[in-house]
Amino acid sequence: MTRAPILACNVLRPISRVLIVWIAVVWSMLAGASDARQVFSGATHGWLRAVGKLQVPGQRYHEGRRSHYLEDCSATLVARAGRSHADIIITAWHCLEWYGDLSRPITFTVVDTSGEPLHREAYRLADGGGMHADWAILRLDNALQRSQVAALAIHAEAADPGQPIIMAGFSKDDGVGELGMALTFDPACAITAQGREMGDTDCTAFKGASGGAVVQLSENGEPRICGVISQGNGEGRSTFVPVGRFRSALNRHMD
Image (cartoon, rainbow, N blue to C red; front, side):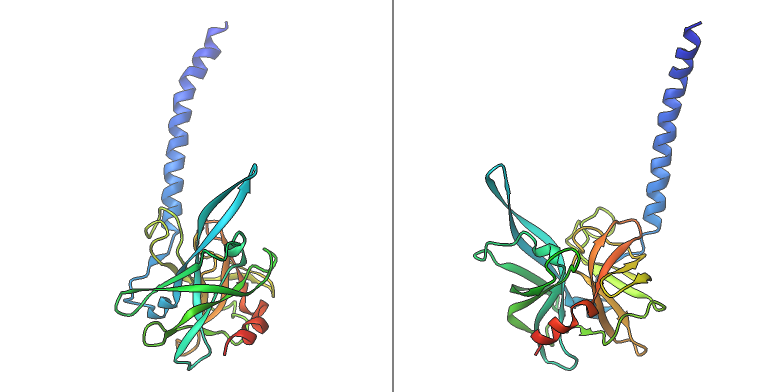
């Protein structure tokens, strides 16, 4: 009387394991199929050269011991329209949260039109002070010329939720790209909700893309940055801080 249930369990257990594995494989295939990101090559959307890799040296304390590490994020070179050079970048506040040792510089890296990496040190000018205002403005120690990398202009208003956006950054995932080494972008995703402090999208982004660009094209195809990436869950939902949240601070620091 007691063997039948035990045998039944033994039969069902391997079947359940196979079913679970099969579901996991199908789910991963579906998730990959929904990932519309592309790796930036320069062949299209050349203005994405303004989106660079930001490396921030951080330090944390645990049980009285200090540890150092590098925070990998993204940032975007911005300037007023028509300027021949740019030295302002924007990113997310949380990328700088653990930065305190000023002897270790923040580094911003972009690739110029010839494919050469350009490195600049960056210094914090202003930030939102917390995740409730996840933005930061930094100045480069040496300006980049438009002939090297063209900076993006700032969207004059809030992004139009009825138009597609492009979200770009150095996502650290094992999907497209090379674990945060390649700039990836979602070429035509949508704003699903937008307020003054935060916007929701159906774009795909992962850790490492934080601080990256949220861009909307004008009617004549000119790129305008309308926000910085705050968070992404890698499952079709990413949030951003609209430029309107820190426009006044930007205006103070952009020449």
